[in-house]
Length: 89
Image (cartoon, rainbow, N blue to C red):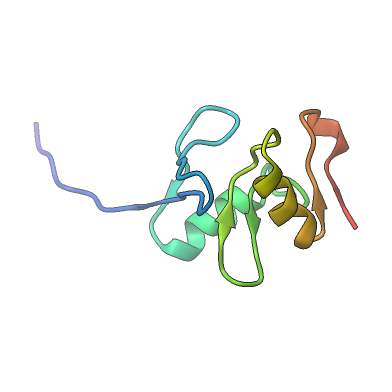
């Protein structure tokens, strides 16, 4: 069986250090921008998923922490534990 090493980028939350999404998997991609696009556009919707802040921080979709909520709100997102109530302002 042939093998080869493969390098990829993973998303890491700048606030808590997690690399997992609420679905329990680690998003990864061939470039930094690819993985940012993956986590910030959950199911192709930019109003869902992680937040890429104006100062360049990547913040996961955690909803039970004040620092995360603040980062999302400052970026114009409101995230709750109900997936159907994510909105952009």
